[in-house]
Length: 118
Image (cartoon, rainbow, N blue to C red):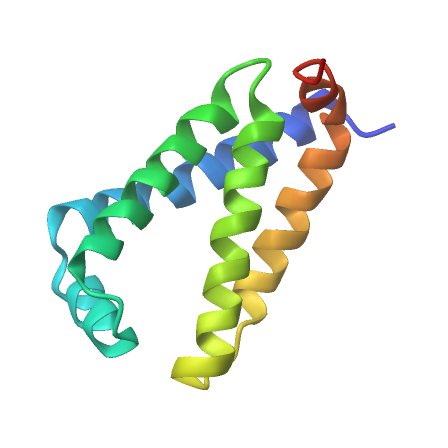
């Protein structure tokens, strides 16, 4: 059984990573503006992605909502991986590692999701 400290450290790290990137996207950081233009989705999708990342960061830290935050991260990273493969033709190792860590947290806190089902 993993240590509660390790689980919290992973949750905090993911929340920090996604919170930071949400701020960049929502504040109009030029690198993200250019990236979303290159991808071809437009700037509206940058804002949606930033809001999803912000929600994931917040949920990751709220007791009882870690699994939902992990699901948002899994969805975001899946989209990032597909975009990197099909549009940008770049590597996706970081995104894959983040997705695997998020999947571990979703599994670890799966009871939170099961509790929401009727």
